[in-house]
Image (cartoon, rainbow, N blue to C red):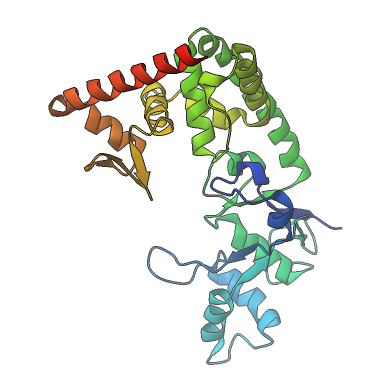
Length: 293
């Protein structure tokens, strides 16, 4: 009897920093590769017992061979599991699935089983789709029918929660604009300036995000600094501050390498005049834009 698990790619739209066309991303080869432990050893994902039982077959070498563990280490240091666009199906069934793994109760497909064990705690592989969606560092995830049901229920709850949080956002247009600016900057989406959109258009965009990416939207709505971060992106949009690589600058002043560092810099008492000047310039620009409309 087969017991299948799928190793799948994280959906394209949730992979932060990727701005290439979807068809090109799908054509690219994606791999779960080798990794190191905190102790500087090859990551394996197997217990010593599992390694002793499974690797002889895959290496075509007896576990009593003097170089057995040398070849085991090489096997994992050369690990490259290709994950096609449709995912990789892994048969992880044992000869008797009602009993635990042992030398007598081996996997029906040893390589698939090793791949599965390797991916279970691999830092770039989520334990489920939901786990991958909630962690931007995870680019793949493991999937089973049972987990699929749990994920559907969890995602449905996230959507309900995200929709419920929209009320307070829609009641405050500064908050609304900040959420949109922050979300689209974080996920590298090119969209019109929120100041140039109608309230109805902004409401539609937020509602769409609540359905398509509820966890990402909720994390931004709940960020206590979202208005300040939105202001930073507004200053950037109006060229009052600049960003070079990962660093933000105002004239020759290095403001920091993250939004949080910029907020900290501008909120310092010594920089209050600079912050007030920037906000004043921004208001002037916005008034001039309204006059020209």
